[in-house]
Every structure is written in C-alpha cells, then in structure tokens.
Image (cartoon, rainbow, N blue to C red):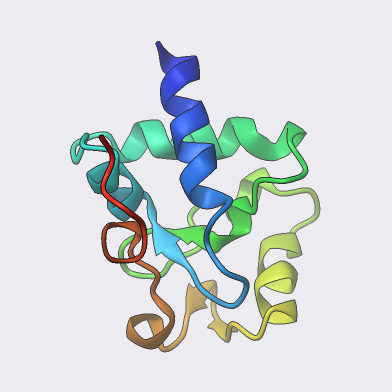
Length: 111
C-alpha cells in the first residue's frame, strides 16, 4: 500500500514546475489524505534513487527545507532551488506565497 501512495506522490511532484515549491501537506490534501504529511515526507526520502522526482521542490508549510539533510552534500537542496531562481535564506524559501504551487489548484481532481 505504501508503494502505491508513494507512486501517487511522485506523480504529483513530477508536475511541480521549476522555480516553484509545494508542501508535504498540499500534496497530501490533493491525494485525499490530508493527515498524511509525514507519509509524503517518507516518500520524498525514498525518492532519491529516482532521478526524475524533483524532491527539492517540496518544503514544509512554512517554506523550511526540512528534508535538506536527505540530499547528498550539506547544501544540495539549496543549490538546486537557487539554480531554478528560488530565493533561500537560512534554509527557508523566501516569497513563499508568490512561488507556492498548490496541486489542488493546478491539477485536475483525482478520480
């Protein structure tokens, strides 16, 4: 069951445009499991073996890079975000409201 949920999470994350971020909670809510933020986090931790899942674009609801320590190197998540034009200061995304990507608003509803 976790594998199916993880795959659904990955399908959402693959659609986050470069230069935008979303939150664990927004993904969970879109998938109809609003209390499953941690499960989304576990999916992101497990995604690093897949090169096509841009896990660096998923942050906590306040824009904090809480998953930063799961990336190789101490600053890789910051570097990936900044290479896409996202401003990060002290491990927090700046201007979160303007670059936040909400899958509920951006994607078709799940069936």
